[in-house]
Image (tube, rainbow, N blue to C red; front, side, top):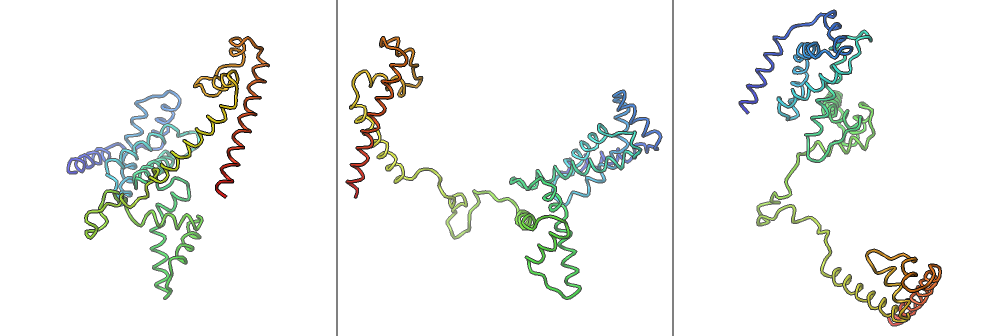
Length: 292
């Protein structure tokens, strides 16, 4: 932590000592980078405005991210701004860069706020960075006028103020109200060290389900064997080769082996399936009659 703080201070000091560019010099450097890809011009432009990036990064320290990481993200935003800046538009580079720096820092903060992704839509981003400020102001104004707002009223007012759907406000309130907790944390001292993960529902098959599945599989196997028994040797061979192999054989290859045409093999296969279907339907009716 001490090393990070020292590094941040050193970077800030270097940035504060960088030259201040006038509009003419800034424009010349921007043209040199855009038209000639002059890396020296790019480096000079970035260095001159690194103080702006650091200043903006410092405003996001309250979100708990390391200052060094915030500065790095601000620097990335500054470089993106320099790469996309069009000097022909007549806008100062600092004015244009502010938006890229802010967007880069905000994306980083939201990605690292929680292991559960907070959201990245425009309404969610607006809520994440403005909800607490707007909420505090609305509560102060209500208190000054003698009003008492319940949670629903407050959420509706925040929704109107920021211009986002009410359900987004309610969802963001839940996400910002607490931090992440480990599932291996104990629930309380009274539970003899029981962890929260022990309270999760087990999605794996239970003993009763396994027994039922095993019984159904055995029953199905018995029915299929019985249905296969209604076929003659040639029909059983065709069904086995066509449906029970990992790599089913073609009608043409079976025809060559049996000395039959491909169409005749297809007819025999269809006839075998009809016999098996009738056998399975008969067995199913018998089971239903037994259960009734």
